[in-house]
Every structure is written in C-alpha cells, then in structure tokens.
Image 1 (cartoon, rainbow, N blue to C red):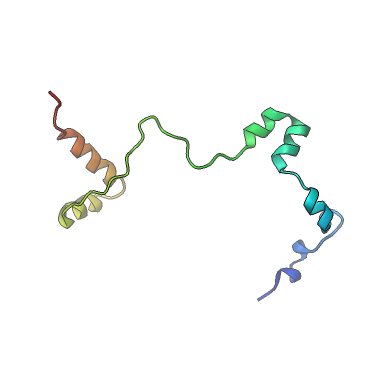
Image 2: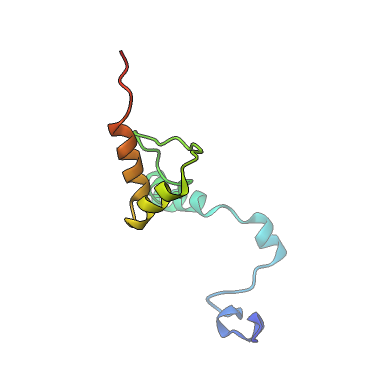
Length: 97
C-alpha cells in the first residue's frame, strides 16, 4: 500500500507550500477571511448549517411495539411503510369530544 508521501498531490509545491508552525498558530477560520474579502453576506450564504432544517410538522420519536406480522406486512409494501403506518393510525385516531 502506498503511503501519503508517495502521492504527488500531497507533496508541497509552489501552489501548496508546507505550513510553518507560526502560520498554523496564526491561521484564521475560512468564513472570517471570506467575510473580509467578499462581505458578510457571502460568508453567511456558504456557512454550513448543523443538520436538516426544522420542519413545521415535526415528528416525535416514539418506541412502539407492533406484532411482527403487522410490521412485516407494511414493510413488504416497500419504501414509505412508516408513512403508511402513520396514515392508518391517523385514520383511526380517536376524536376529542
């Protein structure tokens, strides 16, 4: 197996020089530099968000014990089986008086 030292792309060159300890200590976050050079709006547009955006109709994670044959019947129908179970439960939801 080749080590990373054998890979020409990993070797320092004029376009990719080896960083010194001082350069590493004084390095700044990329978004900070982008905000300086291109503006705060550009930096905000490329900022990475943590996870998926929150949906308005957020689901609740709940453990539900089902009979094996019931679960298997829905799974056999293919992708979307959890949504179909949710729909059946919704159709049979008790009405609040």
